Image (tube, rainbow, N blue to C red; front, side, top):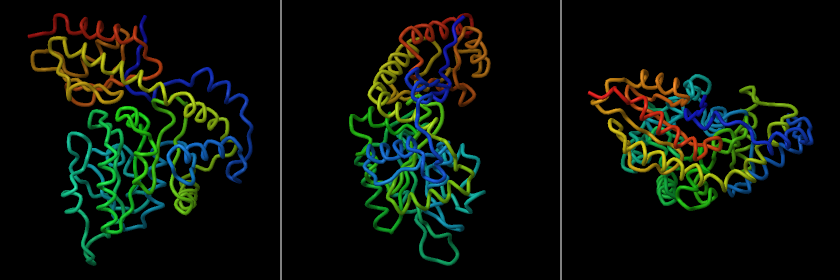
Amino acid sequence: MLNIDLRSDTVTLPTPAMREAMARAPLGDDVYGEDPTVNRLQDLAAQMLGKSAGLFVPSGTMGNLASVLAHCGRGDEILLGHLAHTFLYEAGGIAALGGVHPRTVQNQPDGTLSLDDLRAAIRADDAHFPPTRLIALENTHNRCAGTALPVAYGHAVRALADEYGLKMHLDGARLFNAAEALGVSAQELAAPFDSVTFCLSKALCAPVGSVIVGDQAFIHRAHRARKQLGGGMRQAGVLAAAGIVALETMVERLKEDHARAQLLAGQLAELPGIILDSGLPQSNMVYVTLDETVRLDGKAMQEKLVGLGVKVGVVASRRFRLVTHYWVDDAAIVATVTAFRQALAGEML
């Protein structure tokens, strides 16, 4: 039976090269800063993104939280999108653990935040208000159909932040997907930001981990926050070794995932009852919706697809997210479209 998992690129397993590197990694105690493999990963990540230092963390959620804690104190305010992953899906950590007040700005369909809306959200210097300290963006933007925020937009937000003396953080969980989608380097996308977090364990296929990058002073503060959050690991080079392989071998092949996402989207859009959300996808995410001619709701459709060997994510009552990745090949795309066709058969009004 088929076992095609399109729920997320977090389901990726490490490649054979990663498993080999993990078995052979030279190790030390990373809490003492003595794990050579972790140090190599941090240096490589910082170099690739044009920053002076990096910090390996267990997850993207910890990476974003440690970054916010390094930028903000208790009672400070962060501006971020109403559909931002940090706002919706990270358990309220910035407020619960950092005492940082989130103020949301409406995301545009392309994942950006209007500069006028951002300007209007920045607090005046008034004792009644929490002081605005940080603007956080997301690239690619998950809930906005995997859209990629352009380089010029990042610099426009930077100019606004500088006008008010604010810091900028990028949740770049899929930053390398954004770079591939836009035909630019990840370093160009990272340049306007004081800090960037990116994930190794999504489309880059490593089993665990994210990296935060920024200047030395910021990473020093983030390192302390990581310790407070329980993220200090010992012989973590076992995990970092897979991350090095990810950065050295998986970035260039992301174009294959994007091409398959476009192929999948185009073929699904031809099926009766299927609406493609935003045209062809920019990156590795395909969002589709069942129209009103389909009797099934999203959950029932998901269950039928599971029975046909295909797993998809339900993100609304009739809306799905399908994410392509290393373990989804051309044959899997064909099989997924066939499964949708079979699941829809007999279910049209």
